[in-house]
Structures are given as structure tokens and as C-alpha cells.
Length: 65
Image (tube, rainbow, N blue to C red; front, side, top):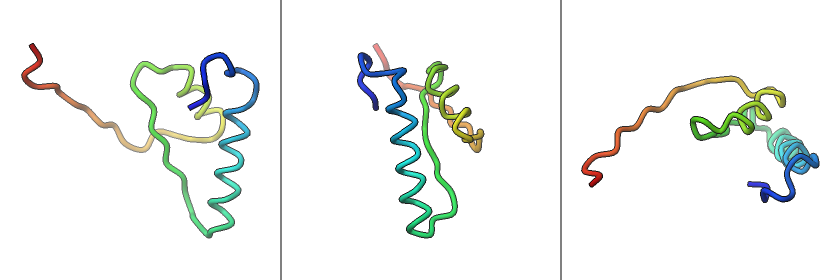
């Protein structure tokens, strides 16, 4: 997570590049990342970086009063 006041400065992209570089160096073949529904800015950023939808997870809270 990049602090709100530090966003839109390329920090998230730099972190993703570093993770990708490390993952490749360790011989990993894919990365997975989660984003909360409705977090359009994060989803857009991840898509721009090359992430694509893989699975859809649905939840239903119970006994919320």
C-alpha cells in the first residue's frame, strides 16, 4: 500500500517492478494481486502494469446487525 499522500508519484509502479524482478530471479512464473471491488484506481494501475482478471471472489456477510 502506498500512503495516500505519496500516490501518483510512481512509487507503486516502482514497487511492482521490484517485485516482478525478484519473482523472475527466483524462477517464479506468475504474480497474483488482489484489489477490493470498487477500488478503480488500483485496478486501473494493475491493469496498466499487465495484470488481467483471473478469478472472481464473492462474499456475503452474515449476521450483521
